[in-house]
Amino acid sequence: MSTTTQPPAAPATTRRRTGLSARHLHFIALGSAIGTGLFYGSAGAIQAAGPSVLLVYLLGGAVVYFMLRALGEMAVRMPISGSFAEYTRRFLGPWAGYITGWMFAFEMLIVCLADLTAIAIYMRFWFPDTDQWIWVALTLLVVGAANLASVRWFGELEFAFTIVKVGAVIAMIAGGAAILAVGLGDASTPTGLSNLTADGGFFPHGPGGMISAFILVLFAFGGTEIIGVAGTEAEDPGTAIPKAVNTVPVRILLFYVLAIGVILLLTPWRQITGEESPFVQIFDTLGVSWAAAALNLVVITAALSAINADLFGAGRVVAGMARQHLAPAALSGTVRGVPVVTTLAMLGVLVVGVLLNWALPESVFTIVASLATFSTVFVWLMILLAQVASRRGMSVEERDALRFPVPLWPYGQVFAIAFILFTIGIMVWISEYHTALLTGVGFMALMSVLYLVTVRRRLPRG
Image (cartoon, rainbow, N blue to C red; front, side, top):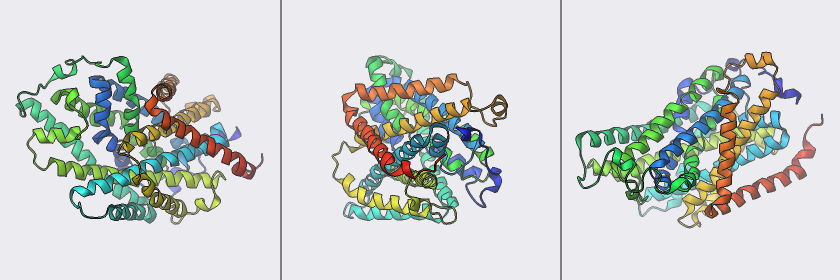
C-alpha cells in the first residue's frame, strides 16, 4: 500500500498542547502488567506448571518484549491516534485494522467487567452489609471521571495506582528475602532452592504441565500493549516510548520472575493452592496480622488501575477507528482531545454488563482469563504482522533512518509470532479453553459480517 511509507504529519512535540509526561508513561508501563493476573492468577499457573512456571514467565516476557518493540518502532515513526488499530489498517488493510481494534475493545471490556465485579466482592471485606452495586457505581464514577477529564488526569490516577501495586510487590520480595535470610516462619515448612527440585522436580507435570500454564501467564501480561496507545498521547513520543518499552525486561524479571521465585523458595509449590493469594502467605509467615486487609487494598487498587487503563486504551483505539470509517462516526467526537462519546458508550456497556457478569458462576475468573487471553494474543499477533509488513514496504534508507528499530530482526519477530500461534494451538488442544476459543472466533466472525455489511461500502474508494 502506498501509505506504508508515510511519516508523521508533524513533529511529535507539536501535536498536543498537554499530554502524558515521561513520568506518567513510565508508570503506565510499569503498572500495565501488574494486576489480578499476578496477585491471584499466579497460584493457578504455579499449580499447572510447578517450579517450571518461572520459564513460562520468561518465555511470555520475551514475547511481550518483541511485540512492544514492534509497536514501539511504528509508534515512534508514526505517533498517531488509534495506535495499533491504525497501524494494522495501514499495513495489512482495512479489515485487519477493523478487527484488531474491535478485538482490543472486546478484550478491554471483558477484563473491565471482571474487575468491576471483583471490586464489589472485595469491598465485602470491610462493608459486608452494603449493596454491591454501590461499589460498582462508585468505581465507574471514579475511572469515568478520570478518563473524561483529561489525558493528564488519567496519567495522575494511574501513577497513584501503580505506586500502590509496585510497593506491594517490592514489600513481598523484601519480606520474602528477610524470611530466607533470618529463618522466620514455620520450621516444618521447607524453604530454599530445594523447593525448586523437590516433589516431582522442576517439571512435576512434564512439558504438558508447563505448556498448560501459558494461558494464565499470558493473561497476566495482557494490557501491556496500552503503552503504544498511551505513548502517542505523550508530550514527546520519540523519547517517552523507547524509555517505557525498554523497561519491560526489568519489569518482567523483577515483578514476575523474582516475585514468583521468592514465593516458590518459601513455600513448596503444592501448598500454593489458590485458596489465598501467594502474597498473603508471605505476609502471614512474617506475622503481619493485617495481611488480608493489606492485600485486599492492593487487589482493589490493581482492579481500579486495570479498569482505568482499559477504558483509556479502548476509547482511543475505537475513536481512531471511527475517524477511519471503521466504527460509527459519532464515536470519533472528542473534547480537549478526550474521546468523550466513546468513553461514555463504554461506561454504558459496563453498567449493563455488570448485571450479566453477576450471573456467572464462581469459575468466572478462569473463563474471563482464557477469553481475554485469546483476544490479547490475537491483538499481539496483528501488531507483529503489521510491523513485519511495514518493514517490507520500506526502502533501505527508511530502514536505516528508524529511530527505534526492533532488535534481533527478523528472528525475534519470528519467535514471537510462532509462540503466539502455538498458544492458540494450546487453546485448541485443551478442552477447558474451547468455550473461550469459540467465543473469540465467533466474535471475529460476527464483526467480519458487520464489516462486510455496514463498513466496507462506506470506505473511501481508491
